Length: 289
Image (cartoon, rainbow, N blue to C red; front, top):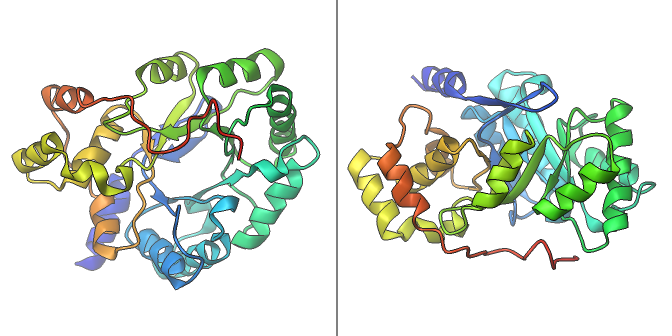
């Protein structure tokens, strides 16, 4: 029965299509604030065996080595190929600047034990506009040379994206930002939709804070799902790719099990109404590492 569940889960995974025609799973595993030890390795491995096909890593998380080991072990145990997975990492500010991007990329590849990434993101825009442009040119070079399948950004606001649009030639496929029921980012979502840039959410569960919200708990009770499943499903209903983090096996399984139900328009509206424009992370317009 375990095998049937595994097949069923991966069969139910939905994909989004980027502006370059490539695809990405709508749900993946995040590994922010996971120690670079067996905890990271085992979480990634368990996720892959449970049907996850997307893993979201970053150089600055300091755990790419063990995440990479989890990827290798997960591939073996799940009986899949590297090509079946979608692996993301992110360029940290130390490697910004056109000539440094490739060094940052190759550093992450080496730590992860991979020979390519499916998606590489600029982790934060920083506050130097010319440096953003120059760094994106370095990302374009990686992409044009066939070293990475897709390039995108993280934590970019509309003004940052407008800067790229005005000065560079390749549009990001994705923008990974803070998004949860207390920060619904409506104007940014509308902008990304108009530009055909996929939105992706980090910390969709607000480090578990959102799971005790009365409205979320009430909707979970109404439909017989967990609060986490309700919030993750809400992301999917809004067309947002999401990467909930967990290192607990049963939660890893629960978090992916959200493709066999939907929320009503009324339930979605109730969750949207929780918005407080409240961030748990830095403000992208001010953060500079």
